[in-house]
Length: 279
Image (tube, rainbow, N blue to C red; front, top):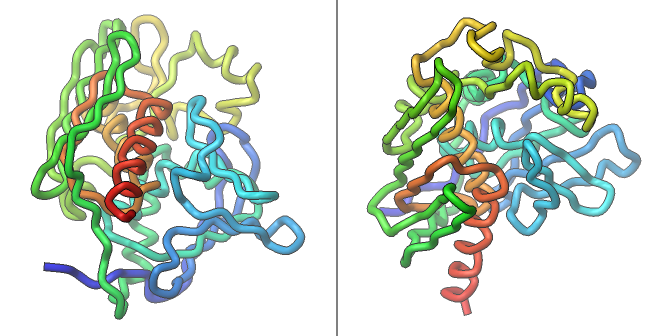
């Protein structure tokens, strides 16, 4: 049975710094009309250009997902989009005065809380949930991500990491607002001390610290973990965010050591199927 589209009831704002840029940013969620989608608006640029959260607008997937449309560019959008996906928000304007959303605590929890603070408003138009009709698989050596038809939305993720405190972790769950909020949203992004200098030389991770990321040196964890398997929970969170660039979907996603690049490739493959069915 089709459900109505949803937006938020009122504007809500949050300030912080970007995970990779380290730049201060004020972010405002605002209600949006039916069939708008999730749209990022750069209020710091003349004319306030915007870019919709859509797979066609992805231009980079190195360490984070970047969206561009003309002068409007935003990056590291996956944690925000995961919250909108899991909380079933179809339409929202996200105004930002910097190219990167605030990192918050490195998870999606702050964005879920903002949505709940703003309240959820049902709209007149019905949700267009795309039910995947065939399997799609993306391989990259020993890593892969695939989706198969499924009655609902499910994510199964396996991460394998050589660090002595990490090893093999797996999670498997149906994506619902309740489960995401309780078990997935608070999982933070992971970082390694040995990679930090390299990332910062690339202009990345300037806003990261042991509170807003799960940081490891060669033997220990410098942060206080929130879950024994926080790494894999955050990887699943990233998948949910990256696949919301398709809008709401139904299918069972199964992944082994996937990345933003593989997630994006899967989204593009599914988008081809969507367009074929619309012809």
